[in-house]
Amino acid sequence: MIKKIKCISLFISLLAVAACGSDVTVPEEIVNPDSTISVPSVTDVTYESATFSSTITGTSTVIKKGFCYGTSPSVTISNTLLELNNAGLSMNAYARNLTPATQYYLKSYMMLSNGTVVYSGETTFTTTAKSSSDELSSYTPPTYSDNYTSIAGWAQRDQWNLANVHDPSVMLADDGYFYMYQTDASYGNAHDGHGHFHGRRSRDLVNWQYLGASMPQIPAWVKEQLNAYRNACGLPEISNPSYGCWAPVVRKVNSSLYRMYYSIVVTDNISGSNSWTERAFIGLAETSDPASNQWEDKGFVICSSSDKNLDWNNGGWETAYFKWNAIDPTYIITPEQQHWLIYGSWHSGIAAVELDATSGKTKVELPNPWGSLADIAPYGKLIVSRSMTSRWQGSEGPEIVYNPETGYYYLFMAYDGLDVPYNTRVCRSRNIDGPYMGIDGTNLTANGGEMYPVVTHPYKFNNNNGWVGIAHCAVFDDGNGNWYYSSQGRLPVDVPGINVSNAVMMGHVRSIRWTSDGWPVVMPERYGAVPPVSISVDELLGVWECIDLSYSYGVQKTSETLTLGADYKVTSGLWKGATWSYSSDKQLLIINGIELCVQREVDWESSPRQHTLVFAGYQAKKTFWGKKTK
Image 1 (tube, helix red, strand yellow):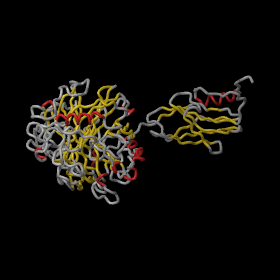
Image 2 (tube, rainbow, N blue to C red):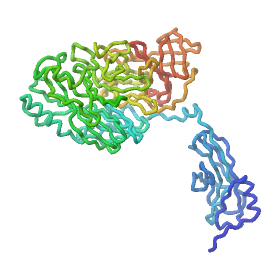
Image 3 (spheres, helix red, strand yellow):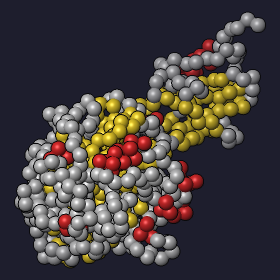
Image 4 (cartoon, rainbow, N blue to C red):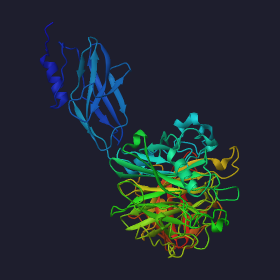
């Protein structure tokens, strides 16, 4: 059959007028069609939707009809299609999920009984920009349950999201994912028998994909190194050591190299039931592709060391055998490209040792890990201690970061027992190896002492069980100036309906803001990717819950009502009678001279969850958290 296109002059004229100068697509085999279709009219245009209308006239049999649209001219039914199923010649459709502030090209179409398609002329419309109210009204909070016990088992691991997280470490990789790795701890020991240092990843810090273990089995070098030391001490070998796999740290070194330093502790006694338990080891693994979850083990880096020679049966916790306890590594590359390992827990304090950039191992060759204090000097130098007289420190889990905006190194620490009292502190220094100072001026390197400020603490807002055991954190940024804090949180003991509720360990991610004098404050509610719409002063008016988060051992701090009045007076609760003001450009609420960083976050205690406002700030040794409720 010879292909041809014929149109009567009237048909051409009608389409030309309808198209207003646009090109008209005339399908093949159309000879004197008996119907026409009008150029669509567009109404009710928003940032994400629009209403289309058109009319068919004539007597041809129409078997399909609708609208087609796209962001480039000359659209056809191969573009986005809205097909209508209703009878009649009037066409009306509602388009959703459009892109804000975008120009679209639009046609009506009809398909005739012979299979040919007739288009209208083409028109355009532009969606509106998305307003602040639009962004917030379309926001959907996270929906996963904090009580994950029904999916805690190994068979449900693909549903975990942030369930079964303990001692997380987080890094941003070049593929755009945040990767998280952790201690081998899970509700009901679900991880047991399935490898070590389990990982997951996320693009948005809200939805996490479980990846599995990064280490299939304990490396052989751990047992070999352990027994080599025992032989040197005249002790029998341990044929089947008992291990714990704790607290890895992960960092990007460059675009083709990522490092993980991990802790493996040997829990057997050194010699008999009255001796100290054996040493811990820190090892190194590397990968060029975190997405593969294939890590190459590079072996021994450092181990626990003692300044008491071979006297492992002497003393209690205050005079513990090990000077430096080789667990909880954190790793940093300074702006001068120096590589440092910071580690330690409970015994004496936190030590720092410089690494060789190429190998990732210590720059100085390590001697036997026992002797005098001078003998074990290559194992590191003290940078922070809670007490200079006792090795019963009650502190662990160091995490170190450098903020180029402030020029400080920040050392975050976990304080107290991990079940309920766990809380987070922070100090800072201009130099990687100290001196580190608290917000109250305490020199924690030279003198030791309590570290302030308190960053997180057991807490409870109304209508919720709240959280305890919030510490041993990861601190990281997204490359765009946004900083985050991640840790586990535990449910309190004896929550009704949950067996061993305090063993429920949910991964938490929170935003960090920086005070005007350069201290990090962690938001009281977990991060939920609420649109960062600017906050007006009028939004602050009303009722808040405020928590004095200042340190109190093992106490779950509760909230009290705080009301901000339109006359810039605090009318109830903490600071009642004080004046308040607000800096919208800095998002700072100032009450009684105290700077409180304000941010949009999720109200995790409301049902259903929704976005709200929160604040966090410091006053000397005091920490304040708040959440708007009305």
